[in-house]
Length: 237
Image 1 (cartoon, helix red, strand yellow):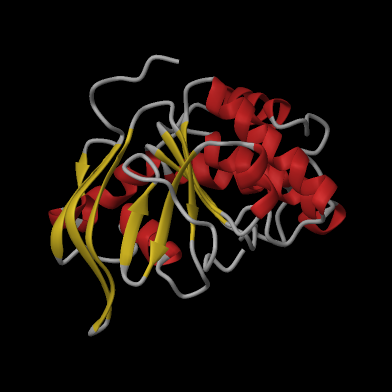
Image 2 (cartoon, rainbow, N blue to C red):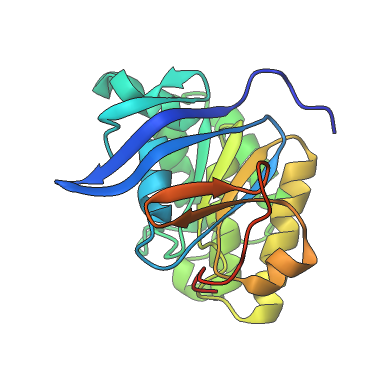
């Protein structure tokens, strides 16, 4: 795959804080369009804080970051929803509305991101559900689905606005190995269609089996396998 010269993510000399605590410092990396990158590190090492910074849930006080063309360090609050339209965010704990059908969960996101044409909304909802192998799930409630199926709904939701990058925070962490493998293969299919992926994971088997680039949060730094080999020891894997 040929990558564009313009990274979908570019972080320069960034320091990430939680309150007065420095979580990560001197962070520098880029992610090209269509690239697949693992994000690893022990619990509490800064993985989630880094992801939250990239989708502007955590303010970037020092340094610079560009995500999908938006400058995160001085992004206006009114622009954050527009940034997130260009991102797909996949959480470990699903965050689906339990009292709404799968279709209603997806329609909520479409309406919130400016879609108005009901036919286009219906077609897009069907398209993304078909794309994740859940074409018949639109009328089901989340509790009627398995954990793996719910995660597929979450991925479908993240794909609604054709994002340039998916940010996934431990998307297979609560799933059994066979289901996890299916979810990961789905991410690979999405990546092959041109969507960049940054996936936080503790799954050592994935790292051994698929030699994608690795970012490792360790001792307040972000190490990059693009620059030097990454040791998997001490990663909490």
